[in-house]
Amino acid sequence: MDRLTDAGVTATSSLAPGRHTSAPSRRLRILHVSETYGGGVETLVRQFTAQQISRGHSVHLLAPPGMASVQGVERSTWEPRRSRPTSVVPAVRTLRRTVRLHQPDVVHLHSFVAGLLGRLPVPAPLRLDVPVLYQPHAWSFQVFGMRSAATAMRAWERRASSRTDVLLTNCSDEVEEGRRSGITTAARVLGVAVDLERFRPASEALRERARRDLGLTARHVLLCMGRLAHQKGQDLLVAAWEQRRPPDTVLVLLGPGDPAPLRALAPTQWGRSLVAAGGQDDVRPWLWATDVLLLPSRYETIGLCVAEAMACGVPVVATDVNGVRETVVAGPARPAGAVVPVRDMDALLDEAKTRLEDPLLRRTEGMNGRARAEELFRPERLADRLEDAYRDAVRAHRERTGERETTS
Image (cartoon, rainbow, N blue to C red; front, side, top):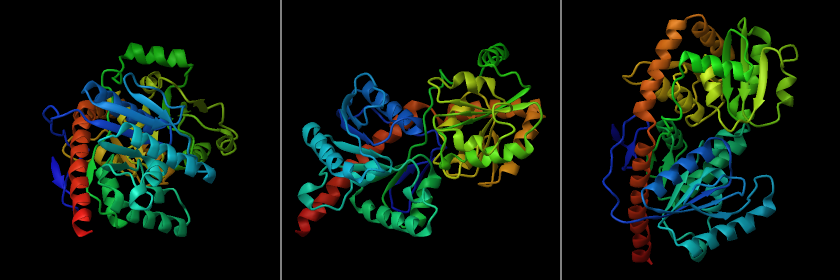
């Protein structure tokens, strides 16, 4: 159901079916801006743009050259890098030139760097004089272990929120975390989208074929999906696996990144009961082959892998990061797995073992997950919410600029 945020605008819960809007009153010119590619952010950007093209909108994407194309979406490239400060000025110029050339009705900024460069505190003539929506895909202050750095990021996000017309999040937990940090921008909760035709439960024959083709011979398979990174918590899981793995079970780490630091944490199990499969263009065979998906993350904003696993009828055992509880276990729908405290790998493995030993529980939670996915993750519902958010941003921008003109 819809609810009101404390900022006074409607925010659609990611657990709600969402309302279907009527056909848009006019074609929108939309500019998506992302400094990253790969992983969940790229998947969501591709879903957004594909839906918008199908609805007749004009869509332009400013992104690094490594991001895959979507048919019908115009492209410009930039390469801002967090580790290279000298890339900032050229990136800002590219962003402003792109806005000037394409004159979008709305600019949709994805992740921290795009959000930073698109909301800099510059003189009025240099600002993006268009409605701006910011989607953090996890707050920047979650990245920093040092309290001083996290405090500085919170201060930046509060200041930048005055140059944001609408905040977009993947889950309501993310909105609440922002509110606790003093970020009061009008917010809309989008949820995530999954192609429910492609991501579907496997028959027993398909499951066995996937295991055979992937060379998975153990009785049970656990899967951890996501790039190999501190955020995703694979280091915590691998260290625990070395000490107390379930019997006759293989753990697959599926995602891009350097596995060498993880290998050192599991010297006796690496390459035996623990396999790093790298990045994969198609993750479905791995989901079909697995018994339980594990999410050991330190922080998230609804891991897309959770939604994909649920769509495939795979139970989920995850740490209690943003969006997981409301997606997997909360609400009137039956649970699709279990949620454990962040960093508690003993609890994560215990819950996984419980499901490995109970085929009926696995099957029941898998069916529950598919039912939840059909209710929560339909792409057209997310597209409705996003289109509503764009129109909110246009109205908010007009009000904001009108007030500025009146007082000048």
